[in-house]
Image 1 (cartoon, rainbow, N blue to C red):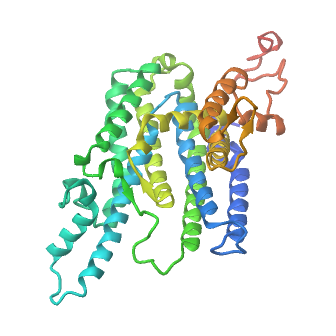
Image 2 (cartoon, rainbow, N blue to C red):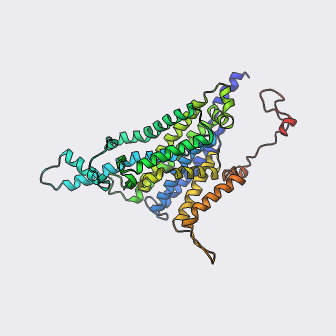
Image 3 (cartoon, rainbow, N blue to C red):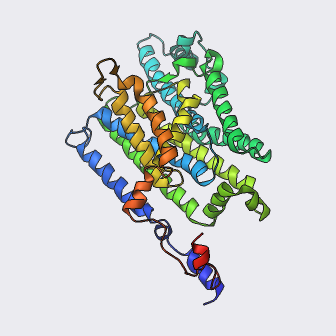
Length: 420
């Protein structure tokens, strides 16, 4: 068989064969979604509360942003400490429309009893006063120019994080900033953005943030039990689609190149690959994924403020991926789900306090210490994370290939080389 025929055969190999975890992941996600739906209050028997359905929906969103982090860090080697900033920007973009439209309906209803029909300017002034009165303003800032338009705000969910990542990445990668210096730059970008949003004149209500996002405009008659399941479905679909996209990217030649960039960037550049272009593409794509995820997350959370964009949030994201297993898509999902649900249990007051006699451990205060300690222990003793357990279960250890031909020509790898 000719080399071209073999190459064509490799191209036609289905994604499920090149990345077997895709089918397993989609099946587990589908069963999980079905199970939660059946047990929910909105569409099922009511065994799961509405608040917990929202928690599960938010957890799926965190799994998706962890996937993005794993793609940019675990596969491409870029330790970004700013991806939760893109996540927050997506939340702000959709939150502006939700808050504007919800307030508009309230203002219109309140002015409907007036003797004269309200003018468009009166309605606009009423909306601005309701939204920005908390920061002592009564006019819309320029950043709210398109808040009335759902299509425009949905576009901003993608465009704002994408453009910020594109500009930042282009400036950083063309200067060949790598390693810890790049991580510091991404963290500085996140800190600058969060500090700016804390200001009342930023146009996004300062530290008050945007609230009431769980109330979908025009759907007052729909109970939150139903809305929560809708968002849960949307989060599950987005996670499934994101997993397939990431698996498709890392399973082909493109994935081989970005892994090579992670392992030896100088050598890949020497071979003639445009390293900066590959890195910029991954950085921008993952920022867009994070922005879309934030637009799904914050309507379930109900509120967004600048603390959500603070650097510590992006550090937590890196910890999730490390605990789950960097360089494994399913590891990122497992890590985010495990830490998120465990955090809810510890910080929600459900974990019983431990009385040592001389001191009482309250997990609400000690959870972050436990999380940091877990990160250190995983880094030192289990670098493969929780995902490494999956490798053991499915027996994905390196096969015994001593003496096998693993290269393009016979004798490419023999016993002597295999022992190294």
